[in-house]
Image (tube, rainbow, N blue to C red; front, side):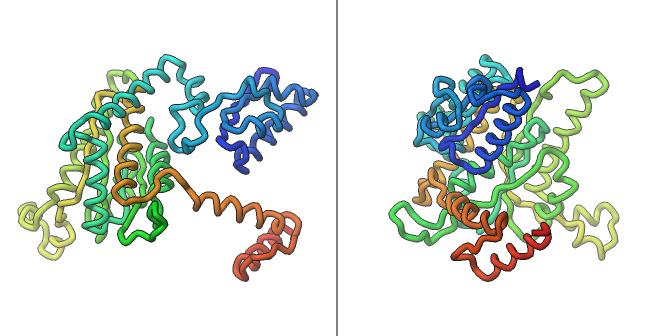
Length: 351
């Protein structure tokens, strides 16, 4: 029902083309369905932004603009006003509990000695695996479907922050920086890529994130399912650490020609993060933990973890290419490959 719909537009600059394109579509739908003038926008839209001029230009009342600091990157912002939609979904009390979780880890990182400082240790472990053992990627494997998008969130946090080859002084680095971050929840991955982690030729450090209690109270007949999930959780980290020797395989009566195939070398690095339950506070702690880990690694590598010029380049080029797609415009600066692909695209679209 458009009359009861409120749109929350979250954009730091209020110029991000994907966000503003979707917001414009929402505005057009609203005005069409309500048969209303532009003044209706101010009643049905709020903005989370740092750019009051662009917000007003869109038609949103700046009194309904939730501000945050313009020096904070979007990937570090969801515990700010950017998290308004989350607060609406879970309620202000749960949101404050999540903020308390952030604060808990912030203070731990600020005050804990190096030997027990978890974000520091995680950051240094990642550097050890990447810079001294040539690990190219890092898996984050949450054993909870409530965290099914957690690794995707960390992909932006980590790779957008530390995917850099230039130091803060402008010189190129002479060492490896940010890893490829990937992973999916629970036992799904066990039937897909765990084979490569166990017996592949690449070193893949992995973080296992699990919880002693399920998020919701399970029916009596389903309690064992969570135990089964966590049995897999512990079994995988044990198998990755210690593997299975040829003698252990032979002791099971395996034919000799299969022994090499069923042998696991072990010694694959994992970090286990085990909490009592996935609560708003624990979620805040997890996000803050990885934020500080990323900061530690950026500091050691001497790169700026708070810019993203690679993202900006893509935005600029997309604006340049779009007229060639829509109108067949002759866009200066297109290379031969892109020009041919654009022509094929227009042919397939019947243009």
